[in-house]
Image 1 (spheres, one colour):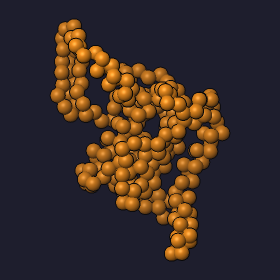
Image 2: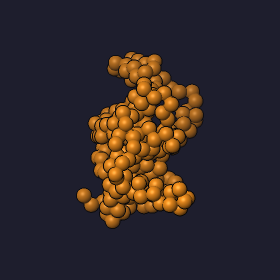
Image 3: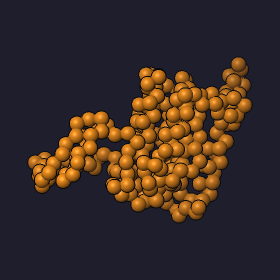
Image 4: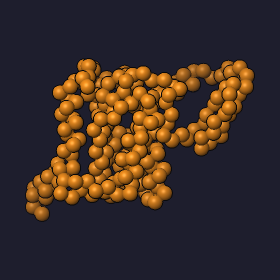
Amino acid sequence: MKYRNIPMRLKNWDYRNAGAYFVTINIEERHKQFFGKIKDGIMHPSEIGFLAERFWMEIPNHFAHVRLENFVLMPDHVHGVLVLDGKVCANTVSPLQCNGLTVQCNGPAVQCNGPAVQCNGPAVQNSRPSINQKMSSISPKPGSLSTIIRSYKSVVSKNARKTTPSFKWQKLFNDHIIRDQRAFENIQRYIINNPKKWEENKLLKRKNSGV
């Protein structure tokens, strides 16, 4: 698949736009290595690691406009490439985990881990539109990269904490817009080789520290 050129990351870039995105998500306490261990260049997932990998692979089941490319599970983080087709439709996007208030007019209410509201008439005019507009402008947009990753992190956390209450992701995540085919191929290789590089880096650190 060839990817058209995409502008470098800008402050006002819309992360619902079509393109390939390289994502890195770290756990909060990286020394704990919740996801497993690397031995001889091969990642051996823990129970939580299997959860993190499983839910990543399920992302397209909940976000139809997303295609997955290379992914790797590491002891304290994950790397993956998500390709968005830019065709975000609210009716085809369903979060992996929902934890808020759902409101549906002229139809059945849906309750998702919280109170549901059902309205059977015309929408009520909000008396504070300026506040709603401000919140809307700073909130992740449906189908955006932030919404996808937030949903992924949430469902992994919910299930991981059933056995390991201390599990926690870092609050944010790192992302990079892949701008052309060469960058895409380099990142794909980087992801594949990451477990092997992990051990090489550990040996280099020990050598430099004289251990």
